[in-house]
Amino acid sequence: MTREDFISTIGYDGDSALVDRKARRKYSGMTTIELVEAGFFKPALCSAIYSENPDELNAVLEKYNSLTEKKIDTAEQLKLVLGIQRMPEEITKTVVI
Image (cartoon, rainbow, N blue to C red; front, side, top):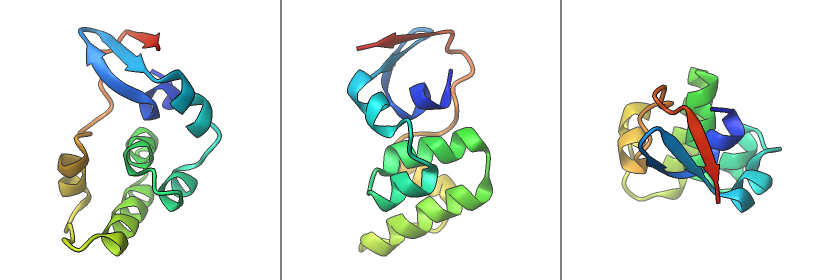
């Protein structure tokens, strides 16, 4: 799965990722930092997970905490809150909708 598909995924069906065509166009040119600064936390978190860069994960966490009343302590907790744990390796197809 490409980064653009991962950050635009809205769900999964078996071994297929369901990708939002409009979101993919909108987010594809943005870096993790640009996504988080624009307030797109789920795509930003997906981008940080895809890059495997802990600095990007921390940037998403810091920005999230700066805007919320209930602070989150770790990037792992943020993954739970936003429902994105990892880059799914079992996905073999993408369906663009």
